[in-house]
Length: 242
Length: 163
Length: 223
Image (cartoon, rainbow over all chains, first blue to last red; front, side):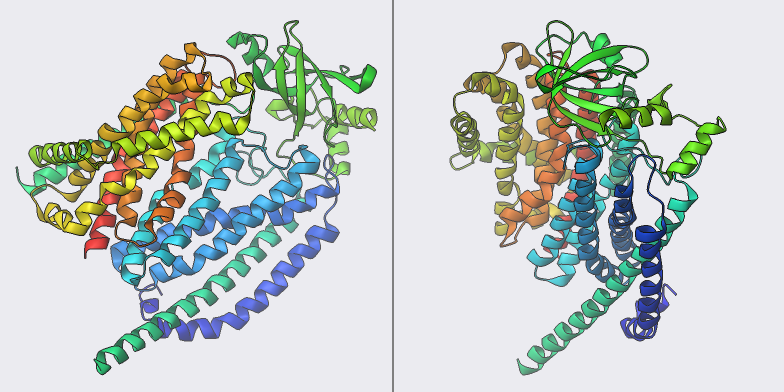
C-alpha cells in the first residue's frame, strides 16, 4: 500500500474511487454522533447541558494533536524513504490541523466561561495548546515563504519535527503540573472516567470528526498533487520555449 | 581523527546532553512550577503577607457565608490545612461546597486570603445525575484524589446553597 | 574538529566587535524596550516593580531574536557558508560554533546587563542575583534557538517576520521557567531550584537540537 501510493497517478485514481464512500461515511457517522451528543446524551450531574461542548471540544483537540504527529511522521518518512507524497500529505494536513486547534481553543474558551468562570487562563494545558496553534501557523508560513518546493519541503520538515516535542507536553501537562484544566478523561489509568451514556456519543463524534479530517486532507492532497503537476508542465514548457 | 570517529564523538556527546536534560527534568518534576498553591504548600513555603498568588483546593463544607456589602466568605482546604478566603464578585456556576476552586488574590496580614478572582475547577468524571445518585446510594462513590472526603452530596448541598 | 570549531567562534566574535557588528544595535534595542515599558504603563511604581522581571525577560528575548538575522546572512551571501560546509568539520559543529559565538556577543552581554538595568524598572534588589543566574543560563538557549531560526530562514526574502513566528513559540517555555526561576514564582523572592533545573534542561536540549536542525536547514538551502 505504502509503495503503491508512491506513484501520484495511482494515488489520484485511488483517491477518486474512495472519496465518495468516505464522504458518505463521514456524513453518517458524524451526523449520528452529533445527534447522540446533542440530543440523546443525558446532561452531566455537575455541569448540566454545558457538557455537550465536549462532543466538539474533545474530538477537535485529539485531531489537533493527532494531525501534528501525522505531519511529523510524514516528514520523517519523506526524509528517510524519499516517499514522494509524504511531504505533500503533511502540507495538505497542516491547515486542517490548524483549524481543529482553533476550534479546540475556541470551544474550550466557551466552555471555560460558564464552568470555570473565565474565558482563558495561562495554565500549562492551555498555554501548550496555544503554542501548538502557533507552530501550525509557522509551519504553514514556511511553505508560503520558501518558493522552491523541494527546499520548502525540507525546511518545513525541520519545523514539524522540532515542534513535535510540544505534543507530549500538551498530553501530559495536566499530570505533570497542577492546572485549572482537569486531567484526561479518556486515556487514563483505570479506563475512561465517563459514564457509557456520555462516552458512546463521544466516541462516535471522535470517529466522525476523524473521518471528516481524512476527507479534507485527502482532498487537499489531491489538489497539491495536481498543483505540482501543473508546475512541472509549466517548467517543461518554459524549457521548451527557451 | 577520521570522519567516522568525529560522528561517533558528536553522537555520543549529543546523547549525553539529552540524557542529562531528561534526568534534570525528571528530578525537577517532583516539585515544580505550579498554577496554584494548596493551603499546605502555602504554609510550607512560608508565604509573606502581601504576596500575590493563586490558591487552589476544595471549598470547605459548611464554610460558605454571605457577609455584609456582598462580601463572600469561604474556606479553601486540601483536607490537611485550610485558609479563609474573602471575595466580592460573581462566582462561577460550578462554585459549590466540596468543589475544587482556584482563587487569585493577596495574602492578608491576618492570615486570610483576599481574592479578586475565583475560578471553579472540576474533575475528569462525566455522568448523568441518576448514575451519580445511585453510585452514592450503593456506597460505590469513588472520590477523585483532589476531592478527599467530599463527593456528590457536598456538591448538591453547595448547589442549593448558591441558588 | 576542535580547531575549526574554535576558529569559527573566534572569527564571528571578532566580526561582531568590529564596526557594524550589531552588538551596539542589540543593546540600543534592549534599552528602548525597557524605557518604553514604564512610559506605556504610566505612574505606578508598585505595578512596575511586580512586572519588572518578566519585562526584562521579554526585552532580552526580543533583542536576542532581532540580532539573530546576522548569524548566517552575510556568510550565506558571500559564499563562506559553502566553504564551511565542505570544510573539515561537520556542518553541525559549525552551526554549534556560530550559535555559541552569537551567545558570546549578544545573549551573554545582554543577560549580564539586563538585571543591572533593572533599576530603570524599579526592580527589587534582592531579585538581581537570581535574575542574573537564570538569564545567563537561559540566554544560551535563546541564542541556540535564534540561530536555528536564522538557519531556517537564511536567504529568504520574507525571512525577518518568519523567524519571529517560528522561534517565539519555542521561547515560551524558556520565558516561563526563566521567570519563575528568577523570582520564585508567586511565593516569594527565593530562587526556585526546580524551575531552574528545567530551564537548564531546556538549555541542554536546545544545544543538541539546534545544531542538528540548523545544519539540516542549511544543507537544504545550499543544495
